Length: 390
Image (cartoon, rainbow, N blue to C red; front, side, top):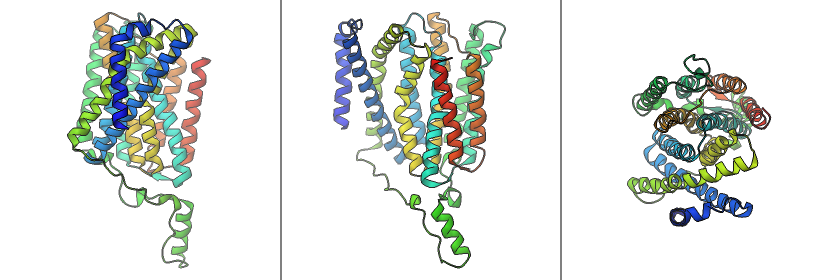
């Protein structure tokens, strides 16, 4: 599978390097356009799954939080490459960076968290996590979100949610420094905050477990009954090869995505313009293409009662997206002279504020239930409705 994936990805790279102009020249015809889009999308998503696989191998070798950090940074590199390709290839995409970042926040903080907590609640009744780690993520996400996506709407130097040159440079440096400080603490003295909590706080509280515990306390049984959903899953078996070889394979899966990003960006831009679709749909599609494998990894972690790993993936994706995409978008705007609109609309600011408030309430306890999942999922549904009917 690994050989087939790499062969397909690099063969596609060679095909578009030599015949890209001829292939993209057929975008005016419906069938060729659809086939080219399906080809690029399939190869990029398949390669992204390869990135997730190699990152998970490194995660089990290096432990947390390094594993999820490698995965989130790899995915964000792909996202930045796609956004850069669209901005550099299209004549006017001033809101693409904003729309993609907002879509990522809605997908991971509402969509994935909502579905994950629902699945986790069904399987494990209630799940524990490391409160300090979740709080640290939110403490970084809130300023990284509000400063670039909300504050530009209230500055007086410029209008329409844009920034001056000085503001762009200052905000880029602030974002990089804050995210860099967070990474140093996450991988250094506070790394224990991002590991699975040990002891009873991480035990699944299913109905069978609670019933057994009550029987034990009343003297009817010597031990609490086991929760059917608490059984340990089959431990992950790492594949052969050294850590260095998996790093090489990780890069070998990332590079084709970055190279093919320009071609996919051309197809996306043409398709959205031809269909008259909402402009924000471009950012949503990029976010979905890039983060689908990581979202699947987070949901898989939740079903195996590894909620902390899922939190590291979801909240880490939000933090890294803001910490790296904002400077990249602003630098591209400064270098190319393109206007970059970061300020959200009034409606989206309300949804963003609600999402941050709900995330703070969800991750301020020590356990999660299905109720929080249902609430986050409802906000995600509202977001999707407003994309097509603002």
